[in-house]
Picture 1 (cartoon, rainbow, N blue to C red):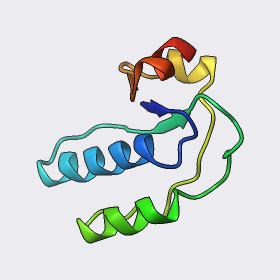
Picture 2 (picture 1 turned 60 degrees about the vertical axis):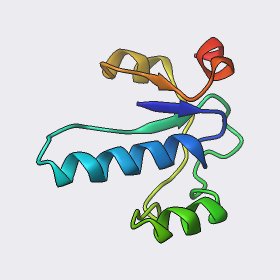
Picture 3 (picture 1 turned 90 degrees about the vertical axis):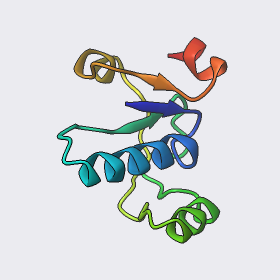
Length: 90
């Protein structure tokens, strides 16, 4: 699981790029992303990020933001925080 602040820019981009790279290499992996805050829960990825990702061949359109929970921390083997502030909040 990738974690950033609002789960509309950095962490969903990391999730979808990693997913595409794993698929291209036939690596089976479950990936997700979350934000430390809840104010974007249910929102799509940030439109400029969707546009930038699409230019590189990554489709962020299925994304729906969510807040990280204690259950996420139990369910995931690896939690990758996008910065030290996110790490402190997690």
